[in-house]
Image (cartoon, rainbow over all chains, first blue to last red; front, side, top):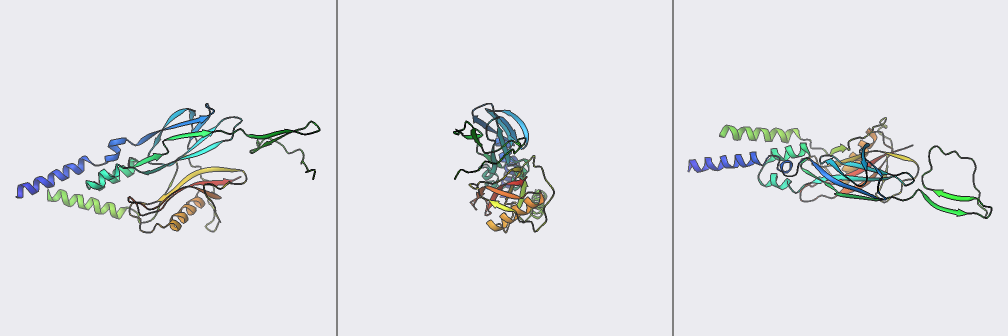
Length: 159
Length: 119
């Protein structure tokens, strides 16, 4: 009797040691996120660090939230977020009593899944309208004027 | 064996004591903090669908939610922690991009918000 109790305790101890950091072991501390844009070839930066041009796969740390910026000349800049949430592997630690494993997963980031797994940006052209006035002046409307542009005049309504 | 169990229990108890009971607040890597705002500075709160008027820069992404042993984490508490962090990093406004309601894993609300600085 005494032997079997000891055996059970030993087995449980070994199991909890083996399951420490269940999620970290199962899916690692980083996750691949696909980033694409239409049109392609846009510059991608993640958390203010240049990453490459679309389409690409970014290997992002599971333990952090991330800001993905997609830029292409002549198009509006797009900013997307990739956020972390608890991974299903967390149950591996909870069920088998691996509280330490849970802490290990939380520290390494293995506890989390990043979502969405795929980002796709539909880039919109900066110019949103162009019309020709009677006197031959082109009127182009842009959403985000370039900082280098200078104000030279103010258009007044004809009404 | 009993010694190992006692050790396991002690480590577990220490972990529980070491873990904060408050809301956990995190910042995305690459956040560029600015001069902190005073504690009474009114931070504007935009929802996901709101259009932000004027020129602005996103300085980071704030995450606030369960620290593991959080006792008070209503939506208001978590939002206030997010606003507090925004002031700390010198933001003028936040735009909430994600809200997670309490679920089977956590009894806390979780908010993700972009920290915005107007130019």
